Length: 525
Image 1 (tube, one colour):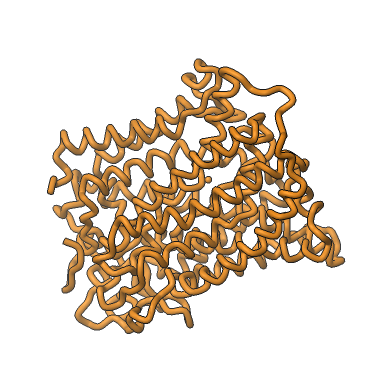
Image 2 (cartoon, rainbow, N blue to C red):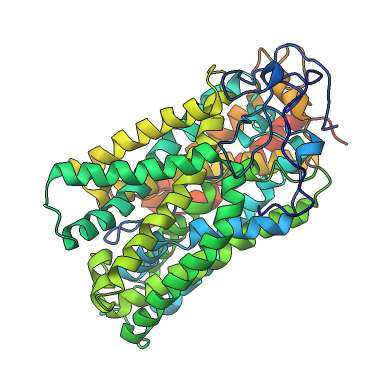
């Protein structure tokens, strides 16, 4: 969000607010292997049991001053008070556009054609799969209502204690993996540029490039919200300009009359369409942390506007540049997308393109690392936000070094995205269903307080309705998923049709609605 003139000046927390009552966006997340088929709300006054960490970047009583562009953001998961909120929902457009003007969109689009789809079929999958960004937008509406991070809001879904297990998987492990996948993509391009500049080809140079990219990304996450909302507006314009130039050269090389040598029909076509949809949808499904960058908006912000601007900001660039990737595959050998794209660009522009790829990855991973740091705090780890970001960053950097120096990048990307929707689809469905059932009425102070007997304590700190829905949705998705190393029995019986996303999400939503109704765990307004 780009703060407006109405945004209040940052101020330190006063002694009247405790950490519990005073006070990511996601992951990359769309990448794919070009050779595979198939990323009562406000409150004040002390409360016991709060889990907002205290530390060197915290204010009085553990609460922190609001984010500002000129220095690192001090606030962690603690409640954002009304007087420190500002901006407009439409400011979310640029925040979500910058990470999605992406080189990896080219890769995903090309994969659709390489798996045998015609150009119209691939474009149809691009349009349909990216509609899942609506889910990301809907979930983001919880940010202004609760005034805290998505990883804290999900305590309403899984319970104070149960939420920790879910966040460890979705907020830590998957986030670190996405950091590694996106850093790997940027590092491949950066290493190529280093070679062009005359640096020796060696593991030491490769490692240095990876570490520089990771360090730049973590700086964005450390400076946090204030920097993101100001910086991403300009970056979205600059990245769009660079990628528009690339698009021009791709269109000149594209074959608009392209047709596969052997067009897919019947079950084979259905399987490719399902796999393509899953690949495209994996990106928006990974952003269940979308409330993180909406929590600084005023409490009375329109939920429809928050959802709409979030979804539109991500949808438009994702559709455009994924479609360009599909067009590129009609005239270029996109089995090696970096070489193919650089091959049609003039030599002087290649370094500009590579820098844009790196910058885009840093914007994408900056949001991921930002949210992952909040997730570390939300499970009760007594770290301030900045050290928490560094912990996740070190883990992601280590995974990137392994991916580049030891493992095959495209294989890692494909493997990750083939499986991640089994978890992220049901998680997104449960989050949306909970928001609808509660009518987006989340109490930030109660979510942060974690008190026994509170509305989110449920049974021993666990909301079994949430876990039942998540397990049922994940199991259903696993039965329908089709990967290069695992095909679910239902997918196999239907000729390899991958319906893991719609099946898993539908079952998770239905089970959550039924279970919460039977257990009466969600008050009906």
